[in-house]
Image (cartoon, rainbow, N blue to C red; front, top):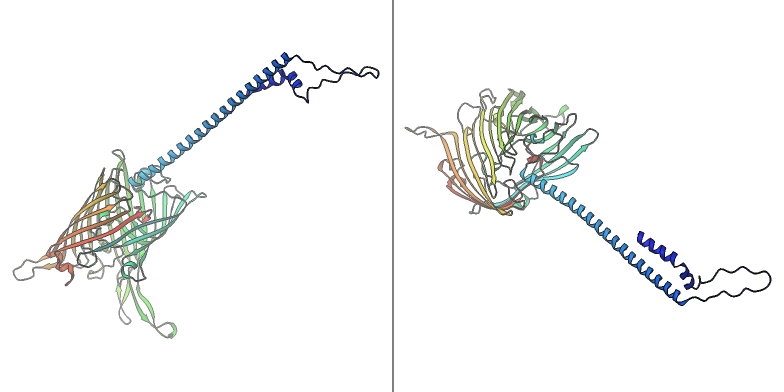
Length: 573
């Protein structure tokens, strides 16, 4: 700009005379002073040396050329500066995009590997019960678990659960789905988070199977939970909730704690890695042990009859969990220890034997003591969990089940259940191995052995390989055994012995995996085949004319899908 200004200054100043001479409107000399009198002044002289004019013209042309060159240089400099600015902006934008992509990739990998902790106000997030629920975030969210199955037995019959133990293979599970809608908020006034959850579940059969415009559904969750109100590591919840801990995936089972109650609970996460959870709720299974209604005349001799609840008692359930997570095993692994307990209690009541004749129903109670030890690497969901659980009296009959075969005093005193279980997962490159096993011993409250008294157990392994990141093949084998309290060999000279049945199962499952490798990566679209071989003892556990009572070999073939995403039912609380 300075060069251009100097050139223009020289052009204007140094050529003023030439400009005056060359431009007609300016080539007029200043008027001379009028002499005294009436004499007209002589005309001005217009003579100019031709050589001087030529030199001035050449100088003017040279200056104009210099100005044009300087203008071109200025325009090129401005264009270069603009291009450099655009490149800098593009580089900054690309860097920002790269940072966002890297963050997104890290978030996806963390979600797959379950190696990150929630962004909650916890001093050491690695200690949050060794579980990894998603972060709280404002707004509405949708989550779901589901499986849809189409299967048969190669003989025209539908697929059917062929396990003889209570918790067996997932291969022959039926259609089931959960749809969850929740609202999450952060409240600036208190610094607290809230989560409101509603989960509706649907089970088989569905419309496309039986053609009935109806559904079997249940409300599995309906509760509100808050975190950070009053203390940043304190949480409360109240409502109707599936309340459970760690599971064995291949057996679809929570061996230690799996409660379904209407109630409330609280938890506290200590910065040292210790956590505490307490819960209480009520249940009333639809069974005469809890409820009896009779018909009576309405008040004031009104016409008709009305139902009156003679026996109407609830079961009160409480649970207590104390645990600690030790980090620093390997690069990112750790150990989790859990101590667990439950209490079950019902109040006394009365039951009608005949019209206006009643008997007293005694109060009843029970309790559970158990524990868990978990080893985890923090990489690719590799872990091993071991549980032990012992339940007595009313608690031995489990969650949402009414007791049978009572003691002589009409209580559950003497009932007991022992469970020892093991489950885990291992992954390395394209190979994975999942497994589960348990032993269960149950005795009801009656002194004599009966069909409901049993010992049972299963060992199940599922090795699998992934083909690139799009597909895989899983193999599964299990051995199951069950002993019932019914005696055989009652003939003369025969030794009585309980009924024992066993079976073996082998299956294969090719699958498509849109979410890539990982034993817990879903969704899956798959096909499967399972062969079941049962002995005479296993066949004797079924009713007369039941196909399983006569078949020593059975087949199961089917196709299906399974998915889960964003569902609090599987956050492992």
